Amino acid sequence: MFTDGQFCRRADDPSGVYRVPTNGPENPTETTMPQDSNRELILSYYKALEAGDGDALFALYDRAVVQTEWPNPLKPRGDRRGLEKLRADFERAKGVLRSQTYDIKTLLCTDDYAAVEATWEGVVAIPLGKLVPGDVMTAHIATFFTFRDGRIVNQRNYDCFEPFR
Image 1: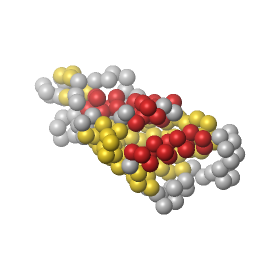
Image 2: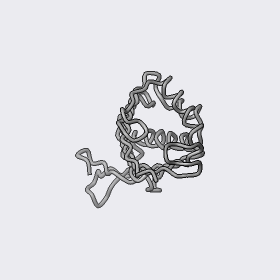
Image 3: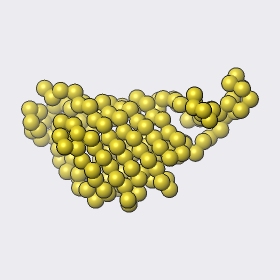
């Protein structure tokens, strides 16, 4: 439990309610917290990525967004992108991947931040190194988001890929 009395919970918690103890831990008062809108924003983000819906995805970003992708097998030098480069890379990825899915393991939100642990799988559409069309790439990822005025203003990705076959 955080010092402010908020409990963290897994993304697969169907209740959609944060519990803040006000009368002792055995008698919590249920309330909807500001973090709920950030949780919904993050879930919308991953749904848009999976669907390849750029309009829905980029509506979630602040115009001044900075996204940092730390080095990984696909980006050995990492990358730092603003909105326009994110758009261009998103469109390029649609030609490389047949599909992609995210299995969110953990989603923690505060008023200004979110942390996500997920497993990503992407089905390759074109030859990519040793991979042939139809092969699946898998990465275990941690992504950290910062929000401003209901939009993503900063994003940091740590992608740990399983070995390519």
